[in-house]
Length: 600
Image (cartoon, rainbow, N blue to C red):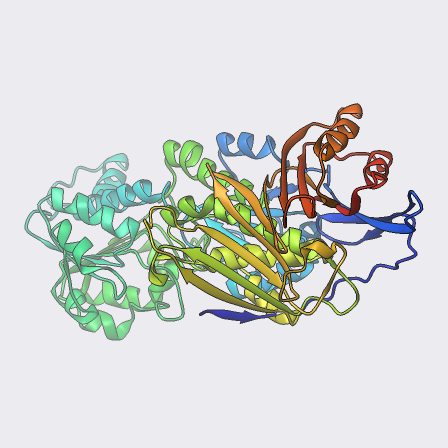
């Protein structure tokens, strides 16, 4: 059973409160107390809670050029500020007014950026694959999701790698410059063939794999080094995975496709160049920092490296006087790996815009790079359960009253699947989000959920009940219990003394199926009214009539009872928020003993 710990204090409500009070939160909700004297039965108090949505659009800062298709998508949802070539100081100043930031590789998103945001920055989108210009540790600490666009650039970068490979082998750039200078030096620019040569692909991710496919089509023998690449994927396209030393020692051509990390920084240096076959040719469309550029110049001068084709550099743009850039055996391009019309206008721009908009909506991104990696197919399958989990958490915490605070939460998953086949990390994060966000100013997501819970002292435990039957659906139900608290709706307390709510997904829609010991069945959409009543004829009609007179549409209604003519709980789903007057009239119905209004 997986557990994570966290503590959370819920503001206490004054029993004498008769006016609305606001609690700073994201989103905000208000609490109202209605004191009603009815039919000689004394005064009964009814609590009304409502979440107040923020009308203002989020603001997205686009700090580097993005294709029009992506900008159009962003503008449908947010206010878009396109401010290019910002200095670090200007970025730090601007970021406090922004909910999202989109960059390419030229903008450094440092710890200072996250600190300057004051907690407002919720997502950073990297329009491309590499994220070494973003401080991931700082992003995670500040609860900021970082997403990238790993697929749209893949083909463009792979094609550019192959273009540089061929251009280098046949001296295309040097020959072009020679002819334009009025020379005709056919003998000087004799090239080498690619057929039968060994290409070592260093980094066998998406781009490296596509380069390997294309190189195989050119008749090259392809080997690869990547300590994390699955051997079966390499074998499927006829590529052999080898050690680092074996790759650099046997290759005629080396193509670099690894990220820049402390491990890969200056991976190609004097020592590694010394292990290479004399006359090796090197292509780099990954990151400039993986090559020690001064060592490369020495290797070129000594003939160990015959040629190099570089699209990236340690410092961009490089100095015009750079010995490496000016070397006669080096061809260079200005970081054009992703620069195709298709990738820029349609691919990367749309992919990153969709990821950023989705994150701002609270959706989970399969391209998140500082969150637990959850496969896209798992996210797709769990999507309705993710919504259910957050709403159950949000519902449960709104039922809490008193000043003791939420300190112990138990989540129970009922499923016919084996524990190893059910990834609950996303569900736990969304329950944490639902519990913490309504009563705090913290933005909770998959990135910082466990950290935020632990920081606030709330202990969240998970339990799984394995059911018999078909495991076709991932979950049968989710139950959330909050222990050692009082409830403003007494019927939400279970037989064992905890606030208990339970739900399941029906036809793709989350439903509330249990409150306390009462079974109900109401769609978790819009707002919910929970009423404890004496079970008797006409109650549904009385409540429905009051709501209908105010033109409040009832989307769902369900009654759970202990026994006929005994106590029952009525759960009513409404599309709109009823007025206080309508809620007061519902509370004045003699058979209703308590009720609570919740806006989810």
